[in-house]
Image 1 (cartoon, one colour):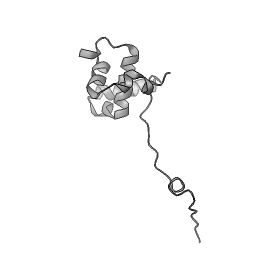
Image 2 (image 1 turned 45 degrees about the vertical axis):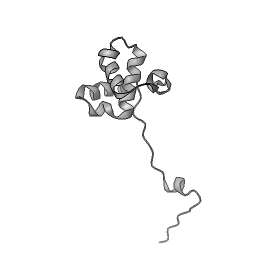
Image 3 (image 1 turned 120 degrees about the vertical axis):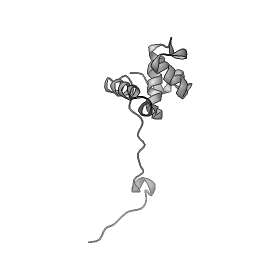
Image 4 (image 1 turned 45 degrees about the horizontal axis):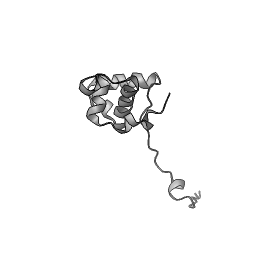
Length: 93
């Protein structure tokens, strides 16, 4: 599976264009499979897939399950050692 997030078709997307390509209306009528998958990846990454009609969320979930797109990036919270790498926490009992 190629990294859709690095494609030019992904980087040029807006919410409207991604929705059009995912649903296949107006500008999205003649979208290639790669353009459609890039649009779905964009909708998942921005969270729009979960805010639009239920069909978008269900379809996004199916595409993720089938390995065609990736789940949304999860940002990890910094741990104490990442925030203060030289700090050593000692606990006395």
